[in-house]
Figure: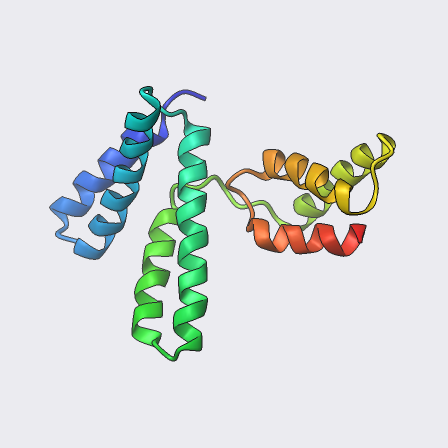
Length: 152
């Protein structure tokens, strides 16, 4: 897969700087810093899959923040988080559609049950398979709820 996301991110930062788009620039720089931090911690360059994992984590944080701000009636702050979320999502692979998610879940459940694992222990195994198949392409909390519904 190579390191195609890092140059893409660097280019987006330059473009945002030229456009004087401070909101976009802040989000991109924050993401860049998170990638750099992990590279420093692990003393190596990250591949795209690892960068996607960082982006997913930040997307999840934004979704949680948006929900919290909306509940608290802080719509302005929620809107700001939504804008950041949109910027982050540009760097994720194309989202999987519902039928693809269904198929991946069904396949994972079939594989795990063929190994004789059922009930709660199967949940972790199925989610492991599903996560690997849909990395960066689906909201894992929603997928997890679907898996739980089918298994338990």
